[in-house]
Image 1 (tube, one colour):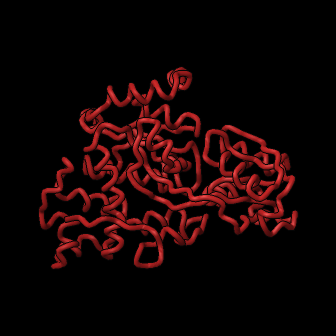
Image 2: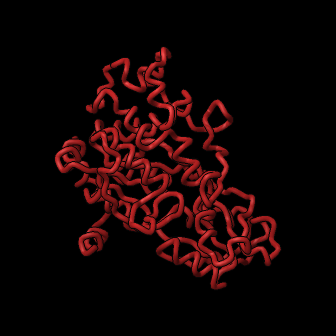
Image 3: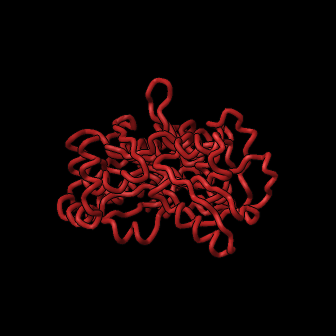
Length: 339
């Protein structure tokens, strides 16, 4: 922790330049040498990254890192997790403290272009919304003029909030906290009228309330928040492994391959299936075993399995697929072909 606090004091620009020079092309080799993936995650966000009662990390963002470990080592459990706040996350990645940042982080041009990091894909298409107490009787965010709003610092949420209220000529009073837990506690204690964040996070925070049914997420979505894993720039091989680990799970869902039927699918004559499972060997150039995608799906699952057990109808959050459905089912999720 002392190291992290010290690094936070260093300028972001200096860190970005140092990361590009010190880590260029070296991440993949370093990961293989130490024998595990160091994954930066949220310190506790239901459905995305949270330790259970036994200290085992679970969630969508956690499963991304497990997929990468399965591809690299053939073992999805070869991951160590570093819980990070929003303020700490980029410094931890830039400094080399973590290998992957898989922590409900929005892909933006300033982050992709100015921090020495690169986003490898979108695990969850999200958008910012508002959580309010039902007793307020408010049905629309356009009725929030003069509201006190709890918001987490160091996020895109702050700027989106100011933009939205400014465009609609409404006033608000921000109450800023460092962590999501602090915002929800303040909201529950009545120190603010509204809590704003990505909608997925709002659903996760709502179940932490003593009376979750007392609050409701308003219908307005005021921003685009594509969330996904990020790595340091300068190591194309590592970037590609992280990117294609996600694509393998998406491709498997599209082909009807799951952790439950994957072994029987090895007999498939479908050339796409054969290439994904490694029964038809191709020169993928990723530097991992030919059955890398098989190991991901067998040990972690396809995208649908990951979504449903963590945030979908098989979870306490019960979020519908919506934009996160596959492209051929009305959603935005799409994986390039493995060929």
